[in-house]
Figure 1 (spheres, one colour):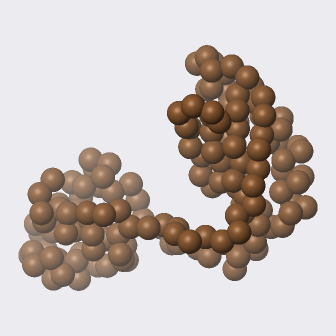
Figure 2 (cartoon, helix red, strand yellow; figure 1 turned 90 degrees about the horizontal axis):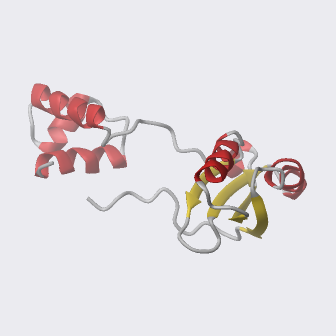
Length: 150
C-alpha cells in the first residue's frame, strides 16, 4: 500500500459516495488507474464495503447498553457456541472478545429499557455457556464511527 492508496482510503472514509471521477480528481489521478486501485483495495479486503451511517435514536433505537459477559468454559466448542448465538441477535451491534475477565463486551441497542429487559431475560441470559452478565447503560456517545488514522 502506497501513498496514493492511503489517499484513496482517506477520501472514501470521509465520503463513500464519491464517484470514481470525483475521487480521481481529489487524489490527482486519472480515472482508469484510480478505478484499478479502488477495485484492488476492494478485492484485497482492505475496503470491506460501503454503507449509510444511521442515527439510532431517529430510527427508534434510543436505549444503548454495554454487556460484559463471562463464560463458564473457555474451550473451543463453548466459545464457538457462544459466538454463534451472539451473531443471531440483531440488537448486538458490536461484539468483542477480550483478554482476561470479562470474556466479551457486547454493544446492544434497543427501543427502550423494557425492550432491553426482555432481550436480556429471553435471549442474552439464555446464550450457551454464560456464567455472568454485567450490563451498564450508555449515557452518551462521545466518539462513534471515527475514521481510521491513515
